[in-house]
Length: 145
Image (cartoon, rainbow, N blue to C red):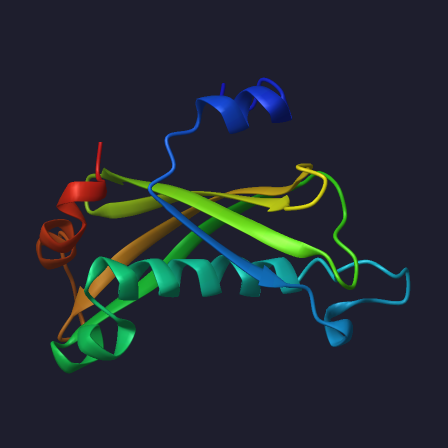
């Protein structure tokens, strides 16, 4: 089982990437918390930054005919984020066959509370055809378990 408790997951996770960004006012819903759909943007933003810092930006992928496509997302919402909070986004990645599986956790930097825990599965198309992800596996080699 992946989540034993929020604290244990944080301590046990072997994160390979970390970034921070602030919650913006327009991401807040009528309840005064971050809208649930916005978290998908946060997760995507973190994956894009990770790819760029790993040495293979989405622009470079496109130039080489590669398109990573999300094929599944599982999101567990834990504690809400609010305007002014700083998101501490962390992830690690593994390969399962041709899929890259990103394990992503979003924390409130100031409180340390886990806001969201997600598992995002990505497949790669190369020149419009499904691929085993070899090119991306080479780029991510130092980050894969």
